[in-house]
Length: 637
Image (cartoon, rainbow, N blue to C red; front, top):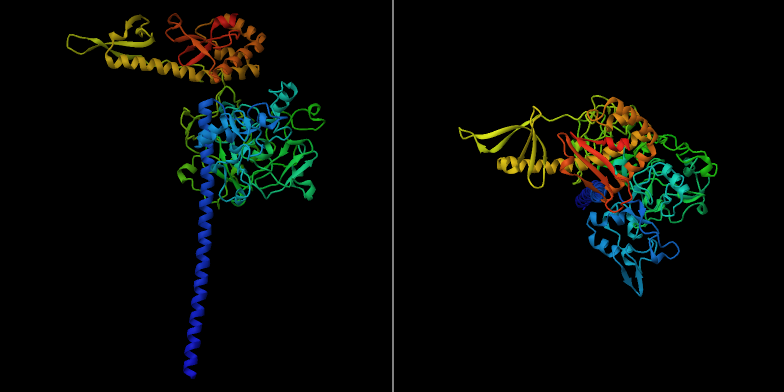
């Protein structure tokens, strides 16, 4: 009996030890499984942001602008079923660009249900989704898989738009629809991000570089405090960090609705660090501080304007949160003393990442806290080395589809970080970025002011020499008409009138292809060069303007002195003519008229004017050796 009892005790102990070992093993495995699942959800969240960022760049490639932060039709203010009241989010405009074509077709066409008829682009975003069902169909790409609140809030969105670093009226209408000049001037000072309500923003407006400027970030659907009716918020954003009673908070937090693009629902500002509370002011929801947040630890995933996706730690330098924000003067703000318009962001590296054109200087030491080293990142090491926000080493020069134009950046104002605009989206042409500081526009070594003449080339003719080899002619092709007439200039200055039939078939094809390529290149370069001219005129740099845009070989020194006087006197008229030309080109509402008589050995002359507005003053320019110049006649008029 005694031996049997010992055996049973031993067996019982073995089973107990086995059970404990199995429990420990299962616990370890379950922890690892949970970590892997969390990591997988974080990767899916990054992929969502990547898809949305690429969709935005493809939208820009199609429409030459980013979607508005909130836009649409002006109707619907008093009768929500009649229109969307300029409140539709960018996610609606982007639908066909992230595989939601069916939803886009429902929204962009008239919709009838239950005896109600809705106009194209739908009713107000807050209209009953049971009656206007497209608002109930939230795209899956707009949800972070780690944010479980999306299961109970079927219209909420996990991603938010960069509204900049200003507060006062940062989420308000621009004033164009209402023809409110006071609001137009006010919001020009506070719409500093890539998105704004009723405002068109283009890649060329991102002077700080697309690799340094944010497009999107994450925001929890629920959970973080959103205070309300906070007085003095624009003068001291840190007031949002206080403790508030329940009656001082919005009960539904951000109250996110995916189709509503207004600031509280769909925006964030780079003011308080990621994971901070948010607040609306006593002036209303348009004057708010909305913070980014996530369920991925101490930080958030963000998408830059070049479609890179990174994880920004909550420890990022965010400056002084008690500093006044940037805004209009006190007489326009009811006495609030804000930083003057055009000021650099007072909110550190985080604030600088939110502005598109303030030229903040960011040193390498300041960005070391941008990326959380403990956060899993599916981006490959090769890609990670491309972004100067991540690595402390100097990156190699990379193709840049949106470098800051040398004519706009001033010496000493460019960011110390070299933008590495690595955009995977098609339809955006890349040009080599420069690691050296941009040269002044009037620098004699600037290639835009002294276009280089390519060397002459040998052209094979259709005729043969006595030994049977093709006859050759050396020179530059000046022009090739649609009828096949070719003008060639030799290195000795002689002009030869030929036809395409005089050349070998291979060189005839090359002439036609080069003609089309030169024309496309000239038209593609035109908007940026006109915008650079506007910048010089706005800065009153008349000497640099005349030196850059009036070719020295076509004007004498005496003529340039006369032109300089007329340009300074007609500054406002010239800016208006240039801006009209840019607007017509961006809208596709333009024509460029070129005649064979206008073609010269250096290039061709053209008139740029609206295709529909005959009253618009045409802009006469000449394309010479790779650069656009103002025709002398225009300067003399």
